[in-house]
Image (cartoon, rainbow over all chains, first blue to last red; front, side, top):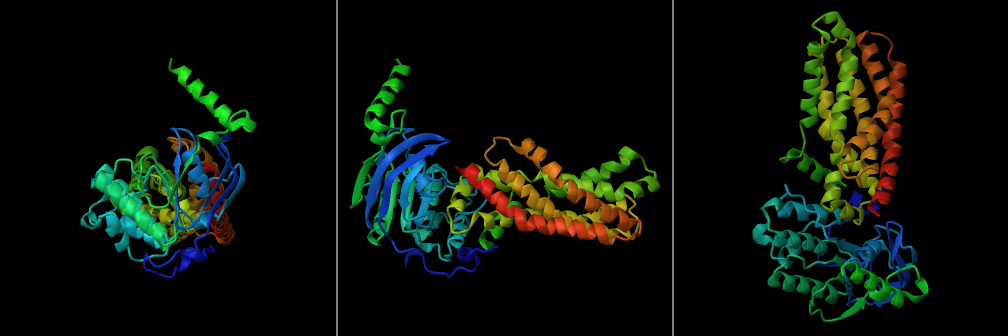
Length: 237
Length: 218
């Protein structure tokens, strides 16, 4: 089995470098589909290193599908994404923690999977050091979320993708999360964050995905999206 | 890769990890056999290699749906798929972890349980050898089946239906090695065939499992 990245990875400390040099994230004519159904089409965006892109849009508008496509979990229906999935670190709705492993063991696994040895930066960034020896099963929802987010610090990937990262976080934890993302941006990283709250990031641009919703009339996406919203509304009348 | 193997082994021995489940099932099946077919030692000697192989195979099947389903449910599979570890490597490691927690204990326990079934003395070595050669194939075929059904809610039954027919060649040659060994006949041909099946499965199926995972993760 050939796995150059995983076989005998060089061990670095978490905050030194990225696996790949950060380069601008470019989406060109990107269309994404969920289960074969087109969700978003004609997406154009460019994010430079040090900048965050905030994705907005109502539930079901395709933010998660877009993030999964960026993460390389599914191919784009059309268009291009640069750089490739090897530059992306993805934090999904689910945190991927193992309930029977401790906080330390969970983070240690992800760190080693990404070729790192030291989990201290992740523990510090999300104030998890006091919980390090506790099994993940004994954590509160917000603590589990912090554990899931702390994993991103251990990825050494330049582009961080977050899907609703602040769900079940209290105000302090949201501030910690914003600080961790800000530090990542200051080191030349990029971030794409689907969220409904204002994180107060220094260099953030907002992309509302609503106008790009793919419908039966691809030529007039914005108009068709309005019609879609009307349909949704009338269903409840 | 070592990190994933270490994590899977650690999960298996923690509470609810399922380590020992297959072994206990194997023990019970073998213990029940004399009750079902009667205490005639000649009959038991005759069927011992087959029963031990079939019991090991079913015990192996029991824990297959845990290979990917748990990581799928808590989202870890998505994160592993986006990590630097190639999915082919992840599938191979998952199969290896399954074998270490299931196939290896079954192989070690089988000669002991052979005593219960009055397995003829020459058969012990060949039974252990045939299981040692054959159980890696069972694990890796099962990993492929688990990868195919990973997105299916309660897909365990479907997976069994897919996997059991694929187990047929391994069972035929594995049980044949054990039977001929017990009767002190020449075993070279089925042993070579069993080894070939195992090696081919280990070499090829991680790639098939990774392809199935990629489709299911979309």
